[in-house]
Image 1 (cartoon, rainbow, N blue to C red):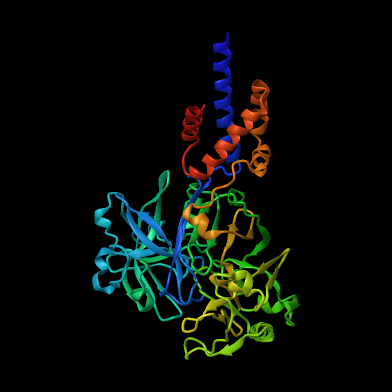
Image 2 (cartoon, rainbow, N blue to C red; image 1 turned 180 degrees about the vertical axis):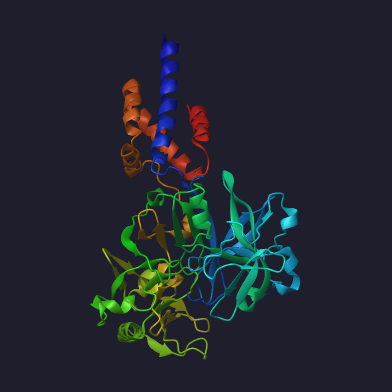
Length: 493
């Protein structure tokens, strides 16, 4: 009899584990993926406008840097480093046939369609012949071709192909550009290509969401001055990383439908609202969130007031104006500041800035609008530039150590301070005893079933242990199926 009761309790414990895992997963029918991103100095300076996975991001917005993710394309999978860009609508990497028409400084070998057993060439007339804006054209042999020209006089052109995008836990077919020609900085940059995350039928996000591989949401988390971070494809709950988001409605523009826009109403510097009309931030293309642009750009009137307020604060707190690192640009720079490794001390010399969006206010520290001087130590320059009457563009510098969630399902954008480098490198592990994790599972529909199991166990500690164990598993194995979590739960008891 003792043995039978022990077996029942063991079974109930395992069932509680599985249900707890399911409870955590109910918030996302398809889940998402987390990819790390990294920083790399150099490259583009600016441009005009299945389950959970977090893709690490590499690189940073430092000097003229960029963030990039590593994608696995083809069968067998080949690695490609691509710049993460919400302002671009298409993803492309160098094609093997490009030869010396593509740059020689790419981190990985060119993509060879003939070397992939799952590669499919796309021709004109195929419903997959979609390029966003500008539209596709037909090459001499009838291939579906694309062209992208950027403001800094660089360009990419080539043909569209379909192949498998390898994600943790599975694959999904995606259409991307196979480059046959590069010019300018696209040619000289070290990154292999661009990962277009803009709102277009050909973007990676639209393709994965359209195939029901992920929920129609993604998040970016850029690290601080030293960079790195994470790209989250699909519904990766911010609570997984103990991040709380503030939301503002997203804005649709018929003129610029592929941009991600929000309604910026005011900007405050050290508590003082810039004396400009609210409608100023709606001119041109409005307020665009663009990860592929290094700096932030404001309309002339807002730019003038912003620089005046920041400079007054810095000079009144003991800093001195110094020449910028590049004589070609009229940068506003200041010397005598603390090192960037002491961001809290920087607040004594540079003001906090408040971004007043519709429905919420997001405050950013000095390092989210300053960049480090490259020729002087303990010196910083204002990374907010004059955009004339073209509009407002919030670039990567504004969102350092910030998780931005593009919740396209609910037409909103979320912001929250986050340890992005730690998230991307997997160093951030939640406290398994955090009661908020239990509350998250309690709010799920599966909790009703879980309570039934609890009545069998008559032991709240067992339930908590199972839940906490599975919460950690959900973080570590968020790309695996619940069956794997069941196996681990089984062996744990």
